[in-house]
Length: 310
Image (cartoon, rainbow, N blue to C red; front, side, top):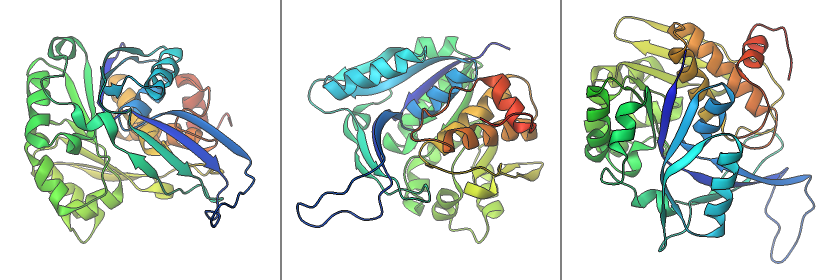
């Protein structure tokens, strides 16, 4: 089934360094095995994996006119992603992060929000969105719920499937800030810490259910090595993660979102879509960066079925 998706919102240029156990003191230096860079962000990173899985992908958001922005455009374009809807700002840098990757694959981040904070509803390509089959909003908290609703509501009225993922860590203030957008979302794809932090719920299921009660059609919360929890008004179930050797967790959440949304577009049920999401996340985790792996939909399905290891 054809899927024309616009990934709108956070586009980040990531620099990854591994392995890093500590920052050297003073002017000290430490030899590492690998330094590389890749597109990332809850819109940009999701777009990468969606394109691998066969979706027609367009990116919308704001980046700078700096060399980092040039590289970001080139790397997205090399994956077959249409970047013509990205606007460029002269007075602010492209959002970027430096990620020291620990030996276990976890990582802190040094982050510049940059041009992502300058994007709003007046920048959104509403006519192009209305012609898409799907709109994925990466980081609604960057513009706030009322502004996000101004993008999501007309999209949904035009028959576009809507989804979002959070970038910020969980906090009750974040939930209040994005609340006006929630009734306009078919799918919300946060992680477990975000759900628990935003809602203050005692359990992940309770937190997801609160978000459903606030108007989200389906909440799919990733749980790291435990997989994902899917909650709708009528059902709740867990999907386990795939056991894999983790090199870097960067982009795993975005890869899960991409796999899940691709599964939905292909007409798969929620469980099968979440399985595809877990497979995509496991494949990305095996290397450095959000763009790791040359898999396609068939390879991800084979991986999920246990008939191939990439």
